[in-house]
Image 1 (tube, rainbow, N blue to C red):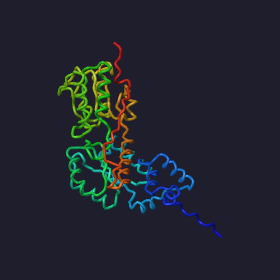
Image 2: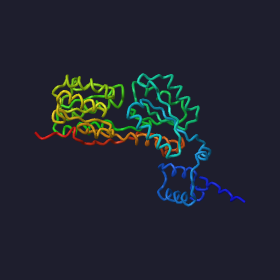
Image 3: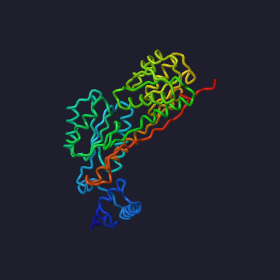
Image 4: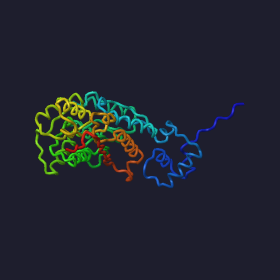
Length: 351
């Protein structure tokens, strides 16, 4: 006679053994806040003793959720959005959720009807919440905010201009830029130009504004000829770097809005016979792994975009875990602090 099949341990059994609610067990499983440390330890001990393994189907039925998060993204050809999506996908999987992904094909022009159809399609698939991972370009943010009352699921926004009561996860672009420009000032550079990203993007505007503010705070002038604009790509950075060197020839250092355009800046400067960093110091932004192998190795502001995606998932699930009547969770902005990585491209050489 075949051995009897062992019955699967349920989340209800874990809750009863630990003398807590099913919601508390769910919070512990998802590593969510608002659980006392001793309670969290007790639940973990029961999970280990009973050898409980969560069932996605059971959790879906118990919580009356699909255990699926909608993600709307754009610009995956750029390094930043692709790294962020990787963080979203990995964290969602670790927390027992699947991801329904849609990419806007033309986000720079932003087709409102197409985007609305995508959102309604996600709701038809019963997603529990939505992560809006589309860069803030033009007036797309205002359109989404106007549409929110029509969608009865929580939203978390990435890389958007924060406002009270709106759940946003973003890198602190202004702090990162100040770190870069202050580093150049500390090295003794005083004629610091800027190669900006496309100024229809919020991040590009933030970085340009902080560059100007940091120079002005140091008592240095800011003029139109001191900056030029690219579109994040190395291809766009080449002509923009040439324009900037022509219109601001006395420039002795430059803060570039991303590492890909910084690569172009290094190449153009070298072609013109400038010695780096003696004649021109360069600092980028992003901290892509390849920047350590540029020539010279690039000083850059590292932003952890994988962690940005992870935090967005945690923020959204925290909103799902709290009932609408709960005062425990209030949507707010989560700022991720960037880090300056100093390499040879910005170190002032002794005369």
